Image (cartoon, rainbow, N blue to C red; front, top):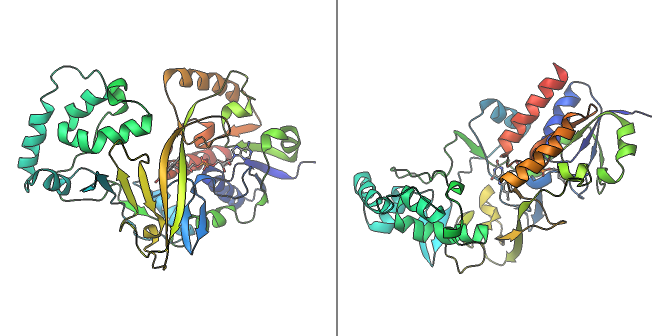
Length: 366
Ligand SMILES: Cc1cc2nc3c(=O)[nH]c(=O)nc-3n(C[C@H](O)[C@H](O)[C@H](O)COP(=O)(O)OP(=O)(O)OC[C@H]3O[C@@H](n4cnc5c(N)ncnc54)[C@H](O)[C@@H]3O)c2cc1C
């Protein structure tokens, strides 16, 4: 009863990129998605005419020209430039750390003056950093650490910076120019009309089954296709036989406000420890919206339990070892291919996910 060339498990960006390119090779695809929407984590919900990034703010940025040309061949992108700000107890600072930040913090106007202050504060740490606090101070000094790093990081990890290992922060980008563009990549933007436009094009022509968990009916689906591309979590594929991989999660609280413009920018980081959320997203600014109302989302870091959204993998040694054991099993499957952020237990930006799907297409069809 094989009717499909590929059963694609997961309607996210990895599955979508593969589906689009496989169909161009004449392959027939069935997409099985356990949520009631396609798009995975880039899905947007339209509220008051505003595309609300339901699973966290997503900004497309890349230095990969092939990926950029690919997505632009499917939908038009606007020129959104991510220039978030930090709010520390009501004081506003530009991000990433640059001359605008230093001018606000110390009143300096020239790079040399800022460098001098940072260097003198950095020199307070003369030993090899023993924890995240010492590491951060050794990189950017005490003022930037105290106001813009400490509280935010402690909220993210649910622990004091002195109890966190130094390697979590390897480098902190510091710019000695007046440049608030968060990303260094040459290409950046948001699809005009939101990410669902991109998703619709990627999956066009596929048969789709929503609200369907592949893992509950594996055998049935395996019989329906020559091959299966699985983009869900690897431990759940193997019914957690070696144990569960850990994640960090997020909780989002969205509200519609009867205001045209709440914070004047898409992303505000709250860097003090007391404010319980880490960021507030005002979605309309991603698309320069002019609607009468606005939608904001407060983002709270959360520990993860089974059933919660697995947002960020915890790639420590214990979890990596466990993942390695599942990966060994996966490598011995001949009919099932694995890909995407969940199956690879890896944080992947969107452009990297697309590039990885390109590689898979290359392997499958060349
Ligand atoms: C909070 C947050 C913010 C981010 N912001 C950015 C950003 O600004 N820029 C950027 O480039 N990247 C960003 N990313 C990364 C981006 O979300 C990923 O690159 C992308 O979504 C990965 O696509 P995917 O298809 O691998 O996974 P997903 O989008 O997770 O898709 C996997 C799909 O598989 C489905 N699925 C899982 N198991 C099963 C099953 N058993 N049966 C059926 N269906 C199943 C899931 O429901 C899901 O829809 C962010 C990620 C997070 C968590």
